[in-house]
Length: 177
Image 1 (tube, helix red, strand yellow):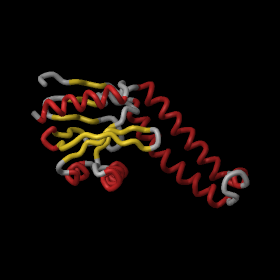
Image 2 (tube, rainbow, N blue to C red; image 1 turned 180 degrees about the vertical axis):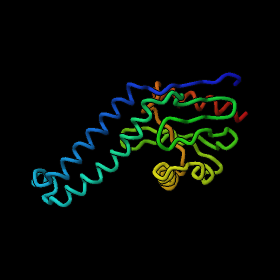
Image 3 (cartoon, rainbow, N blue to C red; image 1 turned 45 degrees about the vertical axis):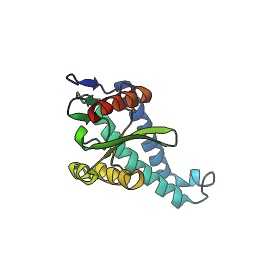
Image 4 (cartoon, rainbow, N blue to C red; image 1 turned 30 degrees about the vertical axis):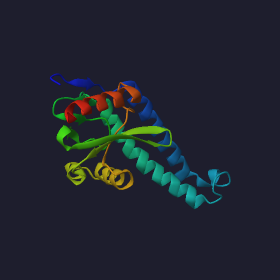
């Protein structure tokens, strides 16, 4: 492949995800401030409601910050070229995934969300490339649970899952020959 395939980030999808995460921050804050209001409906224990609220605020607050930054990025979300796949689509993105390192491509589904798992010959090396703590922890969790630290989805990309998996598999097959 002499030319690059560039898939931009979808600002519309990112905005929807941003407001969804912000909603969970708001609800989590409400759980922390007034857990008694929700206790009789959910767990009957205000302390559990407060803990759920704190976890929600922390987790979705971090997500909101990442998503907000992604909204203003000018980089492409995904680039496929002669060297490999350059991923900039999510918090666990590590940049270039070399064709020479890729040993397999597969799809997993977690609830209703599909992910493209990129199996590499040196997963620990890709985990080491990630400098930030949360992204690194997520990559380790992916590796432990799904056998690869590298996952790609279309949540922030201007494409759909079927098109993306087809494109990646086609280019991967070209590189294997």
